[in-house]
Structure formats: structure tokens, C-alpha cells
Image (cartoon, rainbow over the protein chains, first blue to last red):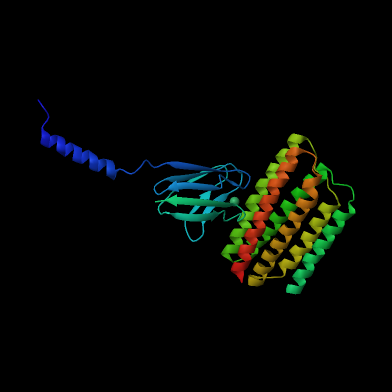
Length: 107
Length: 174
Ligand SMILES: [Cu+2]
């Protein structure tokens, strides 16, 4: 009836390990595009998080990191990107390079 | 060819400058709507000429984005004038813009290959600069209706974006 100490030790070990192995909950960070501007223009997130750009314009935009990822954002649609590597990135719209955003990805 | 291009740009500047200067009275909202709409149509026409003529992927893609954006904004402009019940009114500035565009189109029609690509993109830079100047100094300050003003302000950001996009394409062509 009383708990088996060995079993308890095993459970503690197992759960402890699991708690370490499961990464912090990944989040979705939203950026809205309205009248050719990213808002907020600067965002911070961590590896594994997802950025969702919501394009409210009737224009096609992109979120393009120079020499890196590009997300196409059709008119009135949204696009997503899962962050893979830490760093500090400037991004622009390929079609309207005066649209500028900045992304800080923590490890 | 460079000299001819520069001359053409100067001619457009002179033509538009003088026309805008001549109209001592501020343009009305009806005239502003017509000018802005015409400026978009002209760029769509130029882009269609480029799509039909150019074999350069970057140039064609740029031209396609001009068609897409200007058609979208002009549709918004039409919806707005309908809603506001202001009939766009033809005027000397719109006429001068169309005439300069026609001259340019004929000039570009004589070119092919890389010569065409460079001339088209150079003209896109000059043209967007010209329209941006007009939007900033005359059209936006003159607009009376708040919604029209707001659409013109978005139009300015769009045209500035196109100018920078054209400048990127131009560096790729060098
Ligand atoms: Cu854009």
C-alpha cells in the first residue's frame, strides 16, 4: 500500500528530467501591417517562437531578412515564420524597401 | 542615350513644374483625384510595355509589382470618389502627365534588351521622384477631404517604396 521508494525515486527522476527537457512554451508574436508600416516595428522573441504578420493592406508585401528568410504576405492575408536561430535581424519589404522592421531573437 | 534620358527627365520636370506653378490656385479635390489616378494609370501602362518588351526576370518582376500596386490603389481611389460623390475632373496637369508619358513610351519603344531595361528603370526612378514631389508639395497640402488626403498620404509612402525598389533594380542592372 505504501509507495515503493524505488518507484518514487524513479518518478521524481523521470519527471525532473522531463521538466528540463520540455522547452518553455513557444509563443506567437503578431505584427500588423497597415498602410505600409510594420507595427510594432521592433519585436523581441525567442527561438521556437512564431512570428505572424497580418497584412491589412490591399497590397502584396513581404518580410525579407537580407540574405535570409522571406515570408510572402498576400493582400489582406497573413504569413508565419518559426524562428530558428538567435540574433538581431533587420528586415524589409522586398516590394517597398521603405518598410522596415527589426527582430531580436533570444536563444 | 544617357543625355537623351536626362533631357527627357528635365522636360518632364519642366512640364510638370510649370503646369503646377501656373495653376496658382490650388487644385480642387476633383482635380487632385484625377491627377493621382492618372499618375497610377501611366505607371501601369509603362509597366505593361516593360512586361511585353523585357527579357530580364528582375525587371519583369518589378513591372508586375507596379501593375499590381497601382491597380489596387486606383481601385481604392475609384471606390473613394464614388463614396464621396466627387467626379474626377480632367485638368492641365493630368494632360501634361499623359503627354509626357506618351513621349516616353515612344522613346522606350525604340529600345530593346539591356538598353530598354536600363531606360525603363531609370525613368521609373525619375517618374516616381517627380510624383512624390508633387504629392508632398502640392497635392497632399491642397486636398480638402480628410479621406482623400489620407489615401494620398498612403500613396506617397507607396510611391516612395517604388522609387527605392526601382533604385535596387537599377543597381542590379549595372
Ligand atoms: Cu510592401
